[in-house]
Image (cartoon, rainbow, N blue to C red):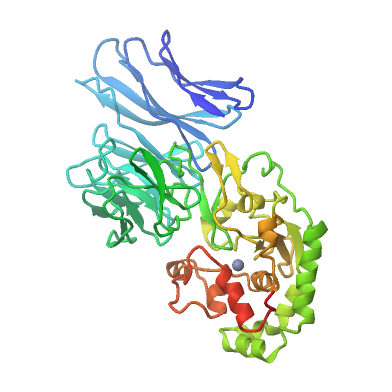
Length: 512
Ligand SMILES: [Zn+2]
């Protein structure tokens, strides 16, 4: 679906046109309230919010008594679904006795998957939050100088990070953290928000990283003319000498949010794309359509059982693991009983390996949520995973934002929770059936995945999230297997192979 917004020159009415991208045919044409003759209209860029609705803010104006003040400008938002069903929502009125103000200065951002938050500069400034077609006016964030705070990012806890200078170059204006009630949390002068990070903080366009209190905590990059772009696969790119080069900077983990990046997603064009993390620590985007080979169907996808040579290999590795008696060996017993809660899991882990049910990760288009890959503890995590097919984590995919390869190779991912009404242990394992994936399918991998099934743990859980979302020891698999010397700090960011290696090193799986 695409949108254009031609103004009808006769009636002064904005319309939002939906276009079917596969045929180019018009799908719908939604009209706003007409502006009266001689009263100019005004509109603002469309966003597509986390609830999948398009939001189009515009104004219509009138002199209730012709050519006599007061003059009234009505701030409206059209909320439209992909079929063209819509509501024309009245947000606020600007009334003036002496001036015909054209631009109310409206700025919108998604409010997670609930609606939008918008601020405006007209009058004393204002802010509103929508839910469905209802609107709540709230007091706008107050900053020195009385500037409007333009929302740019939403942090994982639902608060917002904005700027006091909408059209300024990076570094001008202030960065302001505020919540949906208008309460200002902190202000950083001369900074522009760019990426909301998983630790609750934010990275500015200066390259400085900040914690959730606005305190500077580090510097991502130095001596660059402009902030490098951070891509969908978490690679940094910088324009140099007319070319764009990949540059080697630390991986930054996005906040679980529908606007972790300025502009709503790494392509920054106004669509709020939710992002969270897979059980294996890779970024997951809430994009149901990854191209022809990987699409989440509207009615829910399917799990495709593993078959052929991949199934044969899976059985061979599992048999070697069990028949090799690794899990009952003295070294593995000593290892398990020496780790937090490990003794409780030594016997059940053998059963978990035997009961694993393998699926083809590349062909399975069930949502990650339905596949049991969310533990439900982080509110937006489940929401994003409902919109992301399992296959999207394993295959190069393309969508309306471009083509994306998968960074690194994930050999398998597993169910960590069982959705009601089903009960019992998690048993599903999704195997990467691409040759590069099968090359990594070892005894260690199978044991690693069985531990996910059994414990319900992610590979790694950030220190801040442990307290924030109520995680209990041993928190994550890296802690469980004793390779996390600093609690809450990932010893190998972006990789989970260290878990598999540890299991082999401790004698719990054969080295094949
Ligand atoms: Zn894992």
